[in-house]
Image (cartoon, rainbow, N blue to C red; front, side):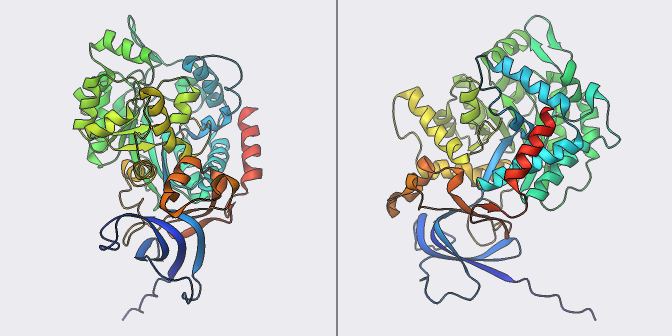
Length: 468
């Protein structure tokens, strides 16, 4: 007879204030911010969430969480190596296309070892900002010149290891990138220079390589991405879609980030990028279109009607002068919204979430396009869902035990009123206000300090190595 298994120890936290969902936690309480919430977990899952528990007489070992506690944040769109561009591409003038050339210079220098060090530090910076899950849009696959490493997924394995070492979950959105661009007259251009590191030749060979990734570990899930209609010819898109369908995996793509992309797609295929992706089966509830900036009304109906998620990255879209996407129209049409830090111009999902509302104000001349709860959902539950982690993003029994606690003591949040605390945090908080982060029941950040990575040392060292 086998020995009985040991009981999983219960962890408890007492949140001064916590943002909770509606029925299912406390059916008699409306959704929203609740005071004095006792949160319990066993292993990586919440087991009980009880509002209205006085702070006096708590069970021994209960961790106090002063401030507002939220579910873990989901960074739905990240290019980790772009962190090396912060402060570099902001100097001088230029466009998205000149920025891209600087990005290629960084891509040309990275190795699996230097990428591991950089991504570990970047993911740790994300954890300090409250992120518990990242979607890494990964296209830097091969050695310079396009030569495959002995392990053809060496760069992907570096990213998986980096997330584990930084204490985050990751969806590795392995990205198909086959062409150097789309020209209205010449069609798809060949890869050249640093772009050769991105390509697998065709969609079938991309799928064969991704199939060799092997088991990813409990902190990671696989996903697929079509880089864009610029980088993947239309006849190669179905191979990526088919791979994602077979695995019920998320499928992401950059969509209509620049007017030039739309113009070239119209000239080559006679349709918009959204219509082209729809014709190849790339839209749907497991799909996420990133940026979705320059859309027609018909495009909005295509995305919304298919329940395709739209991921907005307002700090990057502003930094690269991309434009303002139709976020309200997409949400009204049926598209869930998520957010991402993309180019890492900053890593601040509060800024990304409120950026959705603030850019809509600029575009429409009207305030209040999105409420705080909608923006918080984009940064939490909707982001986790579009990354293939639907069991995360909500503080409720049975869900993954992710917590982010924002202090209300710093000057920028001083005097917050309980009735508008979510609005105050969504529209004023920064990563420096994040004090505690728990990912899948494990402490990752405590008192504003990362427990696994010495971020102030790791980031400068990693950045110096990839810039030299």
